[in-house]
Length: 574
Ligand code: DON
Image 1 (tube, helix red, strand yellow):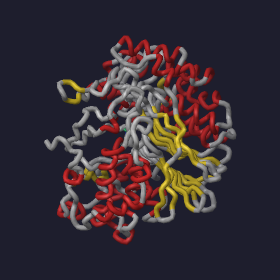
Image 2: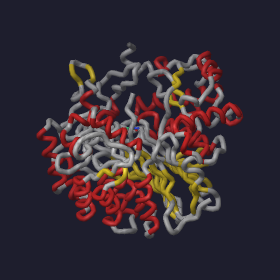
Image 3: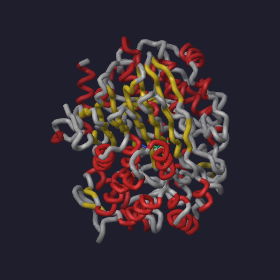
Image 4: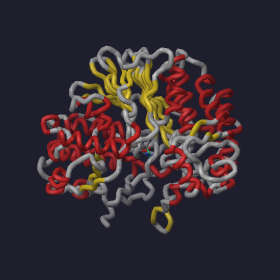
């Protein structure tokens, strides 16, 4: 216990400046609703909507548009994502607004001399899929919204037009981008560069004029202006002028989809989460099912014995992810089998409690060559006073996506095409996957790891969570869900707790720096695991609800600018 606390304190020291005491986001609770997100002004835009009588979906839409202004590395108009909604009567649904491959895309478009040319998916005009965010938010609003659309977009318009104050972290990341990858694109420098030149500093006000104009058009005219109107013209013209693929036809044909969530059961908790094209929901439920027969709690959360079992569950679920998962509109995904208790029993039975399984051996039927995803996405959680819960993760893929700002429209496009399997038939030890389910096809959605989750028990919401982090997302979410359901932690402790990641291949586990001890690492190595200790993992902005209906937020302290926001004027705080 002491060791765990020492590790936790060390982790906090790593991410929270010493001068920040008392700790940021200490147990903020409310019965009037909450928004927990990664950028304070955007969380406040959401609770502003709650205070005006909007519901959780209204607040989520407002938060998402505001994040497109104040958190440009991942908040977006030019990307895509998933929203999960649960209403107080227990009904739940999801909105899939994942990007799609342009109609001109081909299976081998990122291969040069038979090798993946990662520079083509990292940045530039060939990297983006057809954006889904504006359609997705509009669909969620059409289905559940209470306040008028325009009212939900206007806080973002205001933030863009009047400007907002840069945090230390955002000023630094903008400077880094402008002198690096984003600096290659004149429209991006024009949008995000400091007027008159020079470097941004913490406390500077940034105004995003063209983004404001685009948002104002979306507020006034609705989503069609983005997909069929002048914004679509700008996207298509810019692509055509720079070797990109997205056309007006791609945009006009884009549809967000409402999909039935997938559900699992773990120790009496209902796990409600995202179906494909997310791989996260299936893999999360599969891992929980694999772990159910083991008593992790009595082994202790961060012991080698308990971590070994979790790593083995990860290894097996990520192998199934590589084997089977892709866009369900294009390939058959055997969801019911993968999340069945029966499948899990077979997999649990194959775990040696003392010895690591070899990943290549386990998946030798699909490994063809025996010779990591970047880090930006954002998750927010919302609940309103009536108990409607929203779990939303959306992304540009890498930080600032393709780094390309659309000329004349002021917003960044994603680089999500990199989430497809880019080299057909080639699955190697580095984590490249070449299986059929997630190959590029025109109009197909690329597989995602984004895993928005709502956990309920006895008919009421217990936990809302999710995270960024590429393939690590699913394991970050597993960690928070296990923290609450298996280890009985409160949401603050479950979010603070150390995390780890194993994704089948590469066959190595990465444990958060200060999330473990030398003794545990040595024990894991003795079992045959390759162990790396590095960095921090995820940004799981989460909400827990107690039996009396009081919601408590936990903004993830691994990220510097997050906040639990409560509706002004309606607040109860403890
Ligand atoms: O959809 C996915 O799985 C990835 N494009 C998410 C990327 C991501 O989380 C990067 N961020 N931290």
